[in-house]
Amino acid sequence: MFAWSSGRGRLANDLLARWDALDGIAFEQEIARVVRRRGRYSAEVTPATGDFGIEVIARHRCGGRRTGIQVKRYQPARRAGAAAVMEAHAGAASHRCDAAAVVTIGRFTSAAVRLAERLEVRLIDRAALAAWARTGRSPFEPAVTRPPRR
Image (cartoon, rainbow, N blue to C red):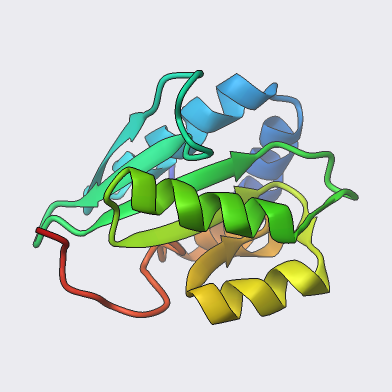
């Protein structure tokens, strides 16, 4: 477990290095733990099969807004593409989520960024994860706030 403290710059780098060493399933579980850590969300890891591309479902404790999160554990130099965005968008709809996000320890292609803007999918890359570790401000807030689905 990662402990928040005042030396956040160094701790952010330590955390990223730790995440770099995790396998895909362990990284999914770690993202769910980190989502829960700040207390505003509950989070569950979906089953490995039949998840429709969504590995973590975060539910905001106030209002119940659900975010379907696709987790891509790529090497830091590898970029997640538009297919990851499409999968997250469709998977979030399948899980009846209000928003979708893609998390990667790497970066995103320009095509992924353009598509995410159109589909309102939140992209969380290595830089956003590091900023989160430094500041404690969650990147999982949706780009556009929508009322929960009924």
